[in-house]
Length: 172
Image 1: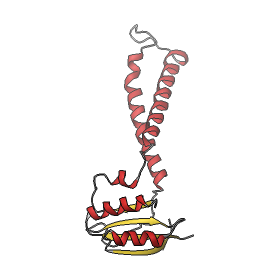
Image 2: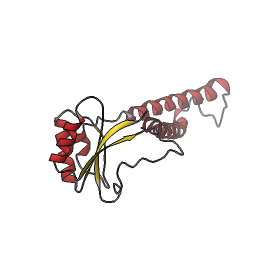
Image 3: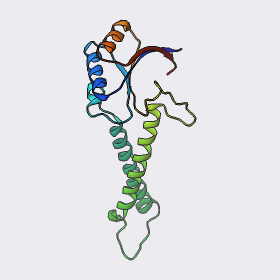
Image 4: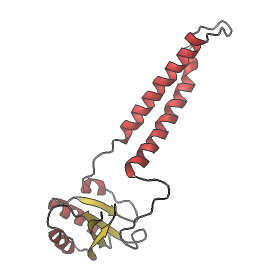
């Protein structure tokens, strides 16, 4: 089912930031902003929450650490104890490199997997460019039509200095 979007293009980042603040002041929700380079303070102006991705990394790393310690303790102490040079069976310092490596590996891989899952990125996905030139020198503000008066949003965008304001239908 196609969704309706209002897309406004701008020539400079200051006008874009002013438009984002004006639209948010009128309780419209910004779907996305496209810019050829990062703009300082844009995420706060858009009202983007902090990511929960660090929690995925932490929980996956903690699970990997627990698994590594448990597995090494089980294999070296209970299942197959070996007397190597008179060292004690529970030589925990020998477990540190494997625990560290598995914690980093599983934490990193699960973070990448969670990011791809959350952003719906997968091989072969077609790109969606809102406006031509947005990767070169254009700035674009995209509003998704939900409830509310989109004509009011279009009027606000034209007031703040949008170069072009248009409605498009597209699949998400």
